[in-house]
Image (cartoon, rainbow, N blue to C red; front, side, top):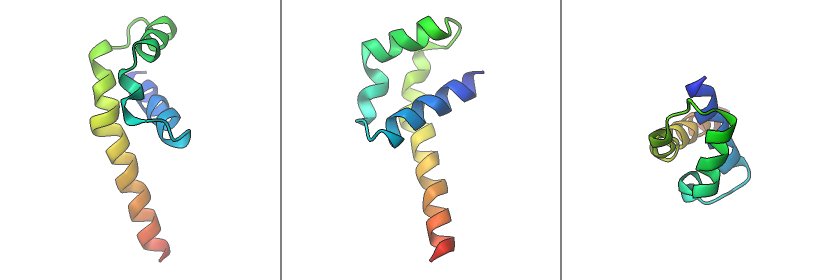
Length: 67
């Protein structure tokens, strides 16, 4: 559950071209807490520090393979 929430949050930020610090916005954190109270509030930094860079690397590799 935790991984899928983090992934969905990262996709929201990346695909909607939102600022990376959107994951730190109090309203966004509150939304996650309302939707899933067990979601670790500290993990919102995980989205910007780990999940989004991982998505970037995966996309970069796919583009390199296409080229």
